Amino acid sequence: MVIAIGFEGSANKLGIGIIRDGKVISNRRRTYISPPGEGFLPKATAEHHRANILELLHETLTEAEVTPEEIDVICYTKGPGMGSPLVSVAVVARTVAQLWCKPIIGVNHCIGHIEMGRLVTKCSNPIVLYVSGGNTQVIAYSNQRYRIFGETIDIAVGNCLDRFARVLKLSNDPSPGYNIEQLAKGGVNFVSLPYVVKGMDVSFSGLLSYIEEHAQELLDSGKYQAADLCYSLQETVFAMLVEITERAMAQFGSDEVLVVGGVGCNERLQQMMAEMCRERGGTLYATDERYCIDNGAMIAQAGIEMFNCQMYTPWEETTCTQR
Image (cartoon, rainbow, N blue to C red; front, side, top):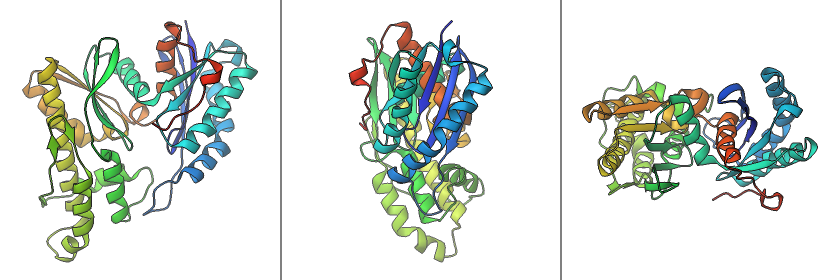
């Protein structure tokens, strides 16, 4: 019965989670929220993580009713992510590993999302759509590796949504993507936007440039409201994601799709993906905001898989990488 603690801090979410024998017994999180119209900068985000991580660690251990002596392994996000936030959390993970005399494992953030999705949904061998603020990838497991079969060739879908939220000066609380989702529910007039799918890859930068350039003009025309623009943006980018995911299902003969990452908890994306899966006789697997959004438990779960295979991280390699 392995007990693992995971530290996550690759972006604006600071999370610490503990998993015991495949069950999440604590999964605490703090979010750095920047002012409306702004993104989160690495320096300010790292300062937030440093200011909150020790208190969050105490809360997590208390909620889980676990002592440091009972923990078997320390897991932390090695990357990819933002440099300063990654390092601020890794320093604490390395420190507690030394203080508690425990092995330490550096976890790939992307694999953390996938392994958490597999644990929660109990899916077997799905096509994975990983969609977040920093990543957009179609992934499948083949020959002992998670392999990327399609991805964005420029910016991530979450970054596209977040940057448009800044144009509309939407609040970053709880997240700009969530506020776009709620606003889009009131949209009725569809605006035709650039739709760019290249084989298994997608592109969002031209779409974003177009809607940023024309947003004010469309709003001033009186024909469209902010809700219409959010609705149109969502429908377009999600249709692109559904298309490349369906193509991956056909290529590999899979009847399962697992959606992970922060954008994965968008109800409209789940609805569109579920409809596609039903038409193909397949099944959609997804999680809610507890596990879609960056969290410490997902790092602990991926770490447990590595721990069980004795894939420890040598001390001199407990660094971070943004790539």
